[in-house]
Every structure is written in structure tokens, then in C-alpha cells.
Image (tube, rainbow, N blue to C red; front, side, top):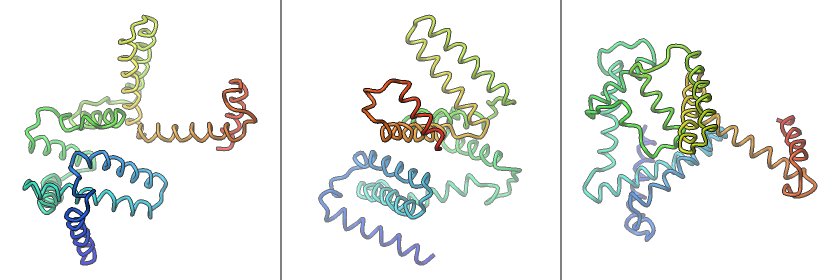
Length: 253
């Protein structure tokens, strides 16, 4: 524990030095850092996906630096310190884990999640269980988080068959919208199909965002295979010629 505290103290000291002496670091605001934080977070996710623990270590450090940076700016503005932020999360964790720090009994992780949401809503005086879902989340992740939160208060299908029936219903409505020629309706119905598919993915234990990312990577790999093995530019090839190489790439995976 002592080594961990020393390492954290060292980072705080370096942050003080950078904020006082480095022109770039002195110039930063919470707003200017926010997009960089998003980038660092995605870099961390990339390393996790690759299973590179050394890479994860480095990216965790980068993300930690950003948290310290925000806290330093908050301290300069007289709003909060890093200690305030850490005590706040510690207090929150204790409040929202009454099955550990109080006398509440839970049967499983599902009850833990329900308790968490119930306590969270009471703490913040929320009128909606969906109120805490950030607007800036990527659409696929936002859909899944809203569905999860709604499920925690009982707004959920009972059977996976019912969820798939909803997918089929939405696909049927999309087909009708396409035939109608109404572009706005077509867009709306396509969104409904995606939302219902994400819900089905959640029901069968699949992370929809991760599944789509895996497919993106697979598509990229196969297109690159076509490019590397074609005897001419792709623009000069027929679809059948490209499809033949696609099938070769598919067979190698």
C-alpha cells in the first residue's frame, strides 16, 4: 500500500510542476482536455481488446493523469480537490453497497444492480431511471444502458422469444416504411430495428457494441486481404472478382 501511495503522491507532485512550469499544461482547461480524455479512454479499450496487459498499464496511467489534471484545475478554481473527489467516490460506494457496509441481504448481482439504481435515484432526486444516462454516449452504448436501467426497475420482457418477436415486428415496419417512400419514417423505423436488435443482444448475453466492433475489424481485415492479393486496383475489378477474394479471406479466418 505504501508504494501505491508514493506513486500517487509522485503523480500529484509532477502535475503541480507541469501546471506551474509547462506552457502547454498551463493553457489547458477542462473543456480542452475532454476530447483528449475520450481518445485516451478508447486507447485503453483497444489495449484491453488486444489483451496486452503492458499496454493496459500504460493507458491506465494516461487516464489517471487526466483525472488528476481535472482535479488540479478544480482545485485552482476553488471547486474541489483530488481528496474531495476520492472521498466522494468512497462515500458513494459505501452508500450503494449496503449489502457489504450495512445489514441488507442480496441474493445475486441482479439485486445488487437494482439496489444501486434505487439508491442512486433517491440520492439525486431523479424522476426518471434514465436520467443518468449521458447524452454524449455513442448511440449503441446509450441504447444498451437505457435498456439495462429500464430492466432494473422491471420494464423488461419475460422471454427471449418475445424479444425476437419484437425484432421481427420492427423489421416488418421498416419494410413498410421503405415501400412508403417516406424518408423520415424510414429513418425512424430503421432506428427501431437497431434498438430492438441491441435489446435482443443484451437478452442473449452479447455486448452489441463489441459485436459490431468485431465485425468492423473482420470487414477491415478481409478488404485488406483483397487489396493485398488483387492483381489490379479494386476500382478495376468486378464484384465477382472481389467476392472470390473475399471468400478466400473468409476461409482463412
